[in-house]
Amino acid sequence: MTNNAYVSGVGLTAFGRLPGLDALGWQLAAAQAAMADAGLGPQDIDGVMSGYALTHPHLMPANLSSELLGIQPQVCFGMSVGGATGLAMVAEAVRMLQTSDLEAVLVLAGEDRASGQSRQQSTDSLAQVGHPRYEVPLGGTVPAYYALLASQYLWRYGLGQDALSSLPVQMRRHATTKEGAHFVKAISETDVQQSRPVSDPLRLLDCCPVSDGGAAFVLTRQSLGPRSIQVLGTGAANRHQHLSALRFGQTGAREAAERALGRAALGMDDIDVFGIYDSFSITIAMLLEELGIAPEGGAGGLARSGELDRDGKVPLNTHGGLLSYGHSGVSGGMAHLAEVVTQLRSERRGNQVQGCERGYVHADGGVLSAHVAVVLGVQE
Amino acid sequence: MTTSSTDWTEGTERLLLRQCTNCSVTEYLPFVRCRTCGQADFQLREAAGGGRCVAVTVLRVPRGANSVHEGLALVELDEGPSVMVKVPMADTGADAAVGAGDRVRVHIKVDTQGQTRPWAERSGK
Image (tube, rainbow over all chains, first blue to last red; front, top):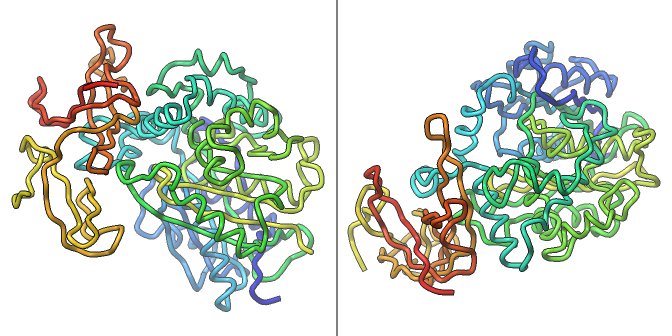
């Protein structure tokens, strides 16, 4: 059973505007939930990785959490790859389990991103993904950079301003029945189109919220039983940092997917349940299309047809995604994996995707800059 | 061709591009190594200014208790690279005066607040 790795523990807190815990508090809550879910104690963990938190920058975040949790790991470090950090940590944990003597790696993230800083602080720190000399001085923010992608997308494919509105509607439909989601009230395409303009053509409901919350996983070298979900392949690609250097339709998403699916010896058609990064309606549209899941210009139509629903051909973000479950920094991109693992464990009760055995999870960081893909499956 | 490397970001009214002396690919951002061929030698040249606007957004910039609308765009220059620029707002004030797909001219302008920035103006469809 060498060269295998399993997600054996999942900890996902509620997301939302939930004052009370600080960044470390969210990280520890998620970590303890993941360890309890795996049935492992501090002495069983020999690797710890922690994602960056905007509200709590620290030189040694993983060491800090380890000390508090009574863990004395061999390998311990923090990571920052923007929104791709969570899956990048999972991919690294898999590599460590496959190539070293580690038995169990804890991956954690969380922060009070909504309650622990002002909206302006949040906007300002996120805008630093822009080029400090050639982009940031022009006044853009992260929503503005994605709005430029949306504008380019609509123009290239000759689509109207409402072409993306069905995507947030579908994410919300999933969140209405998901405990712990930031937003649970159903919305319509009209609601999206009439919400406040943020940065044309994106409106408020095209954008994910800023949330508090945390997520953590325990990955193990051995299966701990049927609830351990096997990591079948991981892949990554990093082709640019700044929007000005992005090549439309060639962001690296496809390479990351091909690498992960290649290692799993599977095709996208073999996947039963999907968790794909959806920071904005345009993000999920561009990713679905570059990954070949939707035709060019067709992601909105795919959502409108109902195929992204739990019972559709491409069950996507059945927890509500960043757009509705919420976005608490690094842990936001981990919630997709938590949901896919829960689906593959057949533990989603009334919201279970029937007969799902293979899952695909994808996260991006920056402006579609960093991509990590993870393919998961129930054990043979 | 030019030898000085100062551009609008340091207040000089010009838009500089960097052409790789090995593979001839032209880039805008000041990469240290060419991302196409890996070489490290670039020739600086001033952009001619012609290009096509491929994306436009309208920013709502807080100004006191209110917010003002500002246009931001991406232009694909005729030389190849994409450049982020400001665009003027239309007289109505709600939309930018440049749309995705428009031919534009990019030039460097010192705005009313004394800031040197690249702007694009529509030059045709």
